[in-house]
Length: 451
Image 1 (tube, rainbow, N blue to C red):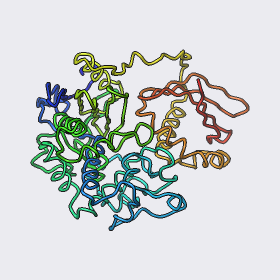
Image 2: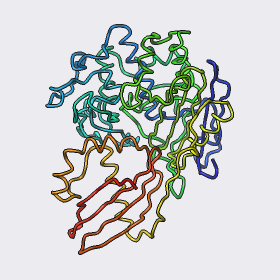
Image 3: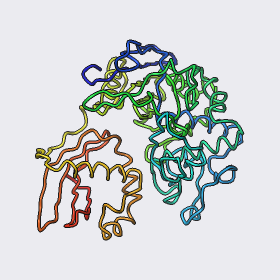
Image 4: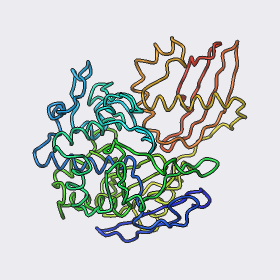
């Protein structure tokens, strides 16, 4: 942790329905003397989606919602706007939970504590002061996988409309209390009496810096709003293991748990990602909010698993390395090791004399991830040719994970047309990109290369 400049970390390891290790390390805020304990609260980021999904599946079990009918039939306050895509196929709860509804808005940056925050309806329609675009169907629902925090924001409205309860209240009664997750809350902002229990988020660059106001606020609660501890998330995971095995049913039935843990599309279940197969099948989810990272991994059948939470945005793979070490120490079978991944014969990087070009590429890749390109940066010919495949490319980029490193490996200049070849290392994939500018300084080409 000291080497990677991570202020605080908390973890929980579980086996056969029991938390066998829970411990906090480090401090709640850089420069503070307050230690992280097992009671310290962290933001779970996108792991919130797994917990929110369980609330929705409970309503399906109760007959109040359907997995496979048009959600507009249950939405009351707001409806998914109809368009050419929804005429072909409808947005359903199953598709919302498995990122296959064709919806926009990849993720949410949250809101600094001292700025105006939008209502849920303003977020759904992308109206100020929302800092993300409108959530709309941009590809035929059910046709392909596309990670969308926007889908879970539609889910949040669906649950509010169905239960006529505030989302944090519904989730507390339906999920958190039955699972014994008594430290956890979807309340945003965090109530004052709980702030003293919370870690502060940090950015890790060349220095460690605390997120302004200690953390961001996420009105997109189903997508990113859970405050929790590793022990509470371990209780969530254990409950899913027990329900799937038929040992207990605190929230959903075993039949519903089987659907939750079945691949819907692209290794995505209902609210969880599925890894491995057979006896080694695991359900997992990662999360990142401003200043916080989380990883939850659990074997569905063996009862093993762990949760790690840190109060920093770390791109050095520390959490993955710790999870790999836990797997080794506690005898997890066939847990993938980073060392097992094939090594690439990588060209040597060259000196980057145009850091602004590199920075522009990083921003373009983020725009590709969100599906919203700044057309002013590109030639009109590029925009015209790229538009038909933009959604497909966005869906691919969304699977890469966080960017770990970028290096320039080739630069050419011919008659004022500049081209650059980069190696970009993401958590889930390494890609090579050819990226070119015309004489007027506009991007005229962007290609993913095999090597």
